[in-house]
Length: 192
Image 1 (tube, rainbow, N blue to C red):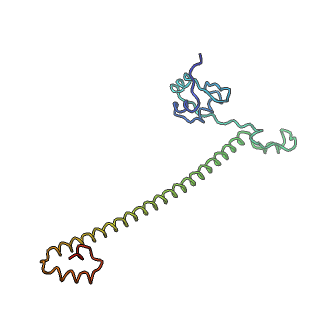
Image 2 (cartoon, rainbow, N blue to C red):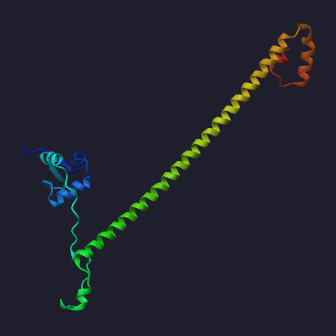
Image 3 (tube, rainbow, N blue to C red):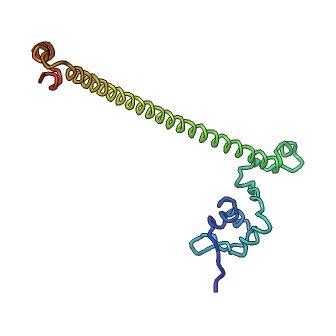
């Protein structure tokens, strides 16, 4: 019977590390793990528990071989005691310099990404501000229309009350004047 095992991402989540970190540990053999036929890493549950108890080791530094790192190669065969050979940089210095360059490139890329992210966030904030301003303008217009309608309704009610308070003998005179001067007056006023 196979013992229970985790995939990389769930195991890394349980250990509170990145999947990249755990994958690098599996590749270097610092974590007991197996590879499936499809090339996926499986970390036994026992190993995850051990790493929880003992702690997760740091990611090992990448090993760069001089041939793949592009270390300077002499053009012609030079004897070891030649002054030209001693001017060449030693391998640790080349490695250190390459790591520093890679680090600087990564920092530059990260800063470019952060700058692009800030630009996108600024665009979203500008659009949100514009949407809020437009919404506030629409609300103000709607409030103005409602206030105007309320005022007109109040004026109509005031006129109706005033006309209802008049003695009946004045209705005829008011009716005639009202229909001549104000043809668009409310029906209650024109009916008088």
